[in-house]
Every structure is written in structure tokens, then in C-alpha cells.
Length: 460
Image 1 (cartoon, one colour):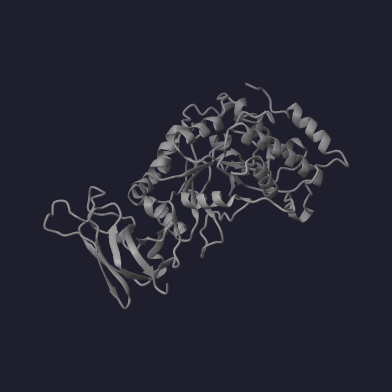
Image 2 (tube, one colour; image 1 turned 90 degrees about the vertical axis):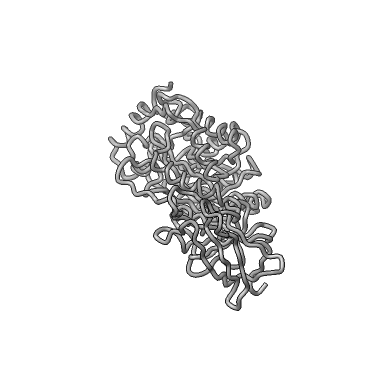
């Protein structure tokens, strides 16, 4: 185990070279002072591979993981360093690594929850803004190898993703508070001199060389902070098949767009109010809320990236696992309406009571009946009639409820649960029964999905 957090020799040499007047990195023009650390995009910039971007749209659901050494405090990840006293910063950098020992870290257990919930890709915080590295790096001593744990967390995470068939994603912060402090700069989100910005960019590239040169093919990278566009270009050269999300595509945070965004996009959300583990005073979303967020995201053509914040021990908190398992039950039934689908000409109807997705070949449309959820939970054995104003039947139309056969209702052999439909001037009227027993009682508070094969949208 390393014993101190002074800059390693390679970093000292890098700083000495890059902070000298007149010394700069070739082909890396600095942005103006008003833009902080953002750099201009190079002429003829590279972009995500279109085939990979199309594949990304299939995935639908991802799991974000925010985890670093300050999870021990239950604080916001990294940001407590901005505006902090020298004493606080010294203790953060020198004391927290000595007690960070996630003995219960088991990425396979993360993957088991994720896979059951229909997650197709993961994104893990290799380095957040604090600068603490969760892999075996030669660029700094401020990392996981200088803790009692002393093992490469990223290596085990990557291996577990591949064992479970989940796409590998890295989160990487171009901003680095440890670097700023050891460069004699004030710790802040953006700023510093032009020469310091160039030194940080070179430092980030050294770290990306390690991450993208030592862990095989990486599927996704999420850059968070200034200079992400310049680093996106660097990744396109290192690994052309790697998809850059933030830094290359629209990535709304803690919100969904009112209308579909152009091209592939991804929205990320916390389960509670904080990205990292918060031991008290947390207010978690319900599983039903996650389901509705996922439905709306997919209806608008985006991917949903849901965050978990492991405890300092490495275990996902029970409260977070619980809501993911409710999502898992729903996805176990309705995965085909979420994965590998595309948005429809009409997003939905009735102010969100109904949303639509469709299969890529357009042969199947999925109607999400959000109106019968929560307090209006759809009781088993009851029939609902819904008019889908945007749809028209064809001679080959078929209607069914995902997850159930519609051939039998438990304990009631005389009841016919078959799905029916008829075309009216107002639209396609479907009559469907919720016949499957999902919970022990008769209620099911989450969205029922109706599959409609060989239908047309009005006006097509």
C-alpha cells in the first residue's frame, strides 16, 4: 500500500513542463476565459459510430453507479471539496483513503440485480470530480490502491459486466479537484490559468490511456465536466467503437424532455435526492415512479440511466435494491415493450395516461395504460375498455396483454379473459382483462401493457 498523497514523479514532470511559458500541447487550442476549461472542438471532429449509436437505442435501460471514498461520510460525491477549508481538504485527501475498505464489494451481486431488472449497460464512476481513482493508476497516489482495500475496483467491475453479458460503461470526470489543489489552484468546478488547463487535459489523457488501454473494449463513456468535447475526440481515436454519451449526445439530468430529442439521447436520474450513498434523510422514488419514467423515456426515443449509490462497504442499500426489484418484476413481464423498440409517430394520448412504443419492424405497437395505476390499481379479473384514438385496425390485427395468455383466470374457469377489439369512429377500442396473478392480493399498482399487432396509426 502506498503511504502518501504527494504528486507522483510523472505528474511532477508533466506539470513542470506544461506550466512553463511557451510550452503547450499541439493541436489543443484553449478556450477563452469565459468558457472555463472548455476547449474548442477540432475541425473535422470525429463522432459516434452510427451503427453503435443505433445499437445504443436498443438497450433502453442502464444502471449508473456513483461510488467513491467519501461515501464513508454519506456526503454529496466530491462537491463538498469546493469552498472547503484547507483543514477539510487535507483530511479529505489524507484521512479518508486510510479508512476506505469496501470488504463487501461484490460486483456480481450488482449485476444480478441489474440483469433481473432488464439493465443492458452499466456506467461506473472510475473517477469523480474529487480526483480519487478507483483503478490501479500510475498517475496519482490518490486512489483505491492507496487504501486498506488495495485492489483494482474497476477491474472487478469490468470482469463482472462481461460475465453477466452487460455492456461496460465508464463515467470519467475531466475536472479533478486533487489535481487543482496540487497545482496550487483554488478547488472549484471550472477555472484556472490557460497553462493549467492544458496540464489537466494531458493528465486526463494519461488516465484515459490506462482505462481504455488496459481493460479491453469499453462500450460507453460518460464525461462529466469541462473539456468533455476534447476528451470525446480522444476516445474516438483510442476506441472508435466506444459510444460517448455526455460529451457527444444530449443527456438531460434529473429530468425528461417535453418532446423527443434529435438522435440517440439518455436521461439520468437518482433513486433518491443524492447520487452517492446517503445514510439518513433520504427520500427514494417508488418502483412505480421508475416504471413510469422508463415508459415515458422510451416513448420519446431515449434511454434511461438509473443511479445506485453503494454503501462504503460496497453493498447496494436495501432501499435501493427494493425499488429496483419492483422494476425487475415489471420488466420480467414487459421487457419486449422496452428493449429494442423505437418511438411511434404519436408519443401518447390523454396527458400521459397512454404511451406508445413500437417494434423496429413496425409490426407491433405497445400501449402503456398508465391510467390504471397507484390508487387506481387494476384488480385481477376485471375488464377495462380503452379507446386508442391514434390507432386503426387492419384485417390482421391481434390484441393481447403482455405476460398473460388470456386463456384462463385462476379459480374462475367460467370467466373468459380473452382480449377483444373493435374499430370505431373515435379510434381502436380495446377490451382487455388483467388475468395474471402477480401479487398475492388482487391488486397490481403498475402499468399494464397491451400489445397490438398489425395496426396502423391514423393518417398513415
